[in-house]
Image (cartoon, rainbow, N blue to C red):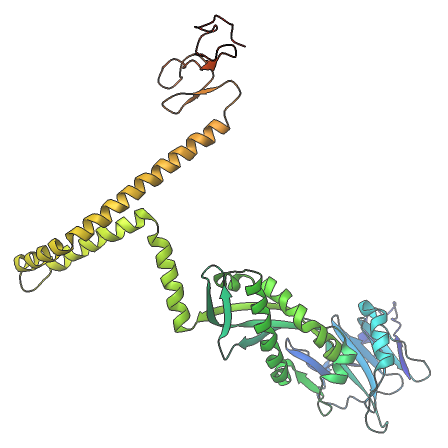
Length: 399
């Protein structure tokens, strides 16, 4: 027994005019991975009716569906190509591989499908679309060494992932329960979710080794999916005929100690800037004056108390402010020096830089009008330093 492509009568135009009864997938929802075929009569849906097929039965396969003709638990023919097919007892298995090509035929030849004594032929469908929206969340924190923070941090991750069936025959043999005729991904996902979370921990650890900052993980969903594929796909493909398609991180949270370390490191990085540090000092003074002004015991007493405190801490505040201002001036001088060096490196040949910083090529500065300073040179004969065309000591012309 096998299936053959059903011929369409071009004169009548539609298949519904030729066949009053067609077998289709029962309910191929977004998260459905496996279901039995159901007879659909013209003008009505007889869902739940006996899906037994016999010689001459017509089967309709939609895009992204894999159809199997099963006899007593054994796959006797299949197709991965959309269209209408007719059951023909006199034909050999057709094995329409579609995009799977010879790989699917190899699985068909290797697989040993056990089952009951042949009693009736049934039609089953496997969903070849990407199964999306599978939720995950790490129960325990995952350790992550971040080179930027130079610390071992601990995070929890929540999000969604998707899978795709890549070998429907293997999936049917290894993943579909034998007593089920309708299977959603969530029905069989418990074991796979445990394996997924184990692989997720390994993948996040590999991202740490590769130097990716912990704060960038949430935006690295595509890269994380590739890490997961490298870890899981070999096993899942070989054992169950499916693979990871994508991983989306919805949220990342840190344990309390890790959050403290991150906050402390970020605050330290900000306060290393003298301008920010000086603003913090001045803000502290302003907040103290504001608090004194709102003191219910009286502003005068509060300001007197604040004055005593400020006298006690005045030396520290003045020293801190002076240090900040000195560093700010040094930073400004360094920036100006860098700008001058950058301008000089980009200056055309034969140009000179005026005291005001302008780069010129003429005899006078185009910004302040000062004349160009004559370049000094040393005489190769007597070693004297000169600025004119001839040496002032021995009279030798400039070389």
